[in-house]
Length: 144
Image 1 (cartoon, rainbow, N blue to C red):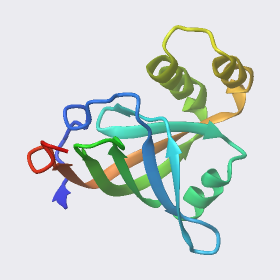
Image 2: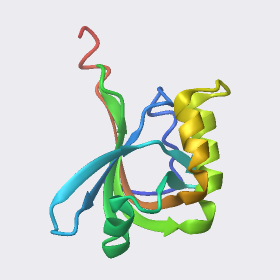
Image 3: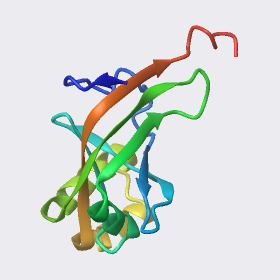
Image 4: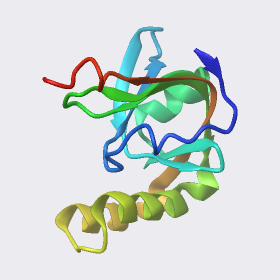
């Protein structure tokens, strides 16, 4: 993996509405993965979740994490890496609003109403990437 040097994820991953897959260790030390909406802001990755979600406890106990941002359809391309996560309680509402705009747009939906109803209970997950690896298998998968 290469060291992070203000790299941007967006040119690598063309579908901006795909989630990040965040790898972490649970309370028993067993690896787990969760998919979350994300946005890259100032070289960091931000997600939002309810402050009572188990992922919050797990990341507070062990902030080391891995991640992948990639589409599921060929040709496969994306970004994966590792970093350190931090729970930021006072940015949850702000980050969730950014994420709803990105993933849901301006359309009013049932999901948007549910998220807005519980927005005061949101916290932000701030991931500082330490290492990144970009991959693009478009050439070798051109006829897939």
